[in-house]
Image (cartoon, rainbow, N blue to C red; front, side, top):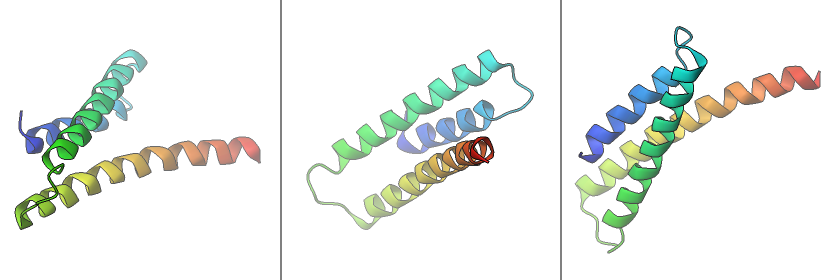
Length: 89
């Protein structure tokens, strides 16, 4: 599977993990798939960039993938922070 395909699958599983219409079990399974795909993407980028020579296309792909991963992490952590905020006050 290409990096682009993994990224799309990762986004899809992220959306599924946060879908209110799924059961908790289905959402948990989607979240595990999402985390696995995130790890695979990071490992693949790390291997690809190990030689230190990146073309403009490689740089663009890195920025695209990392920005999407960061967006998903921020979205997930903001939701948790809001929940903890309400518990504290």
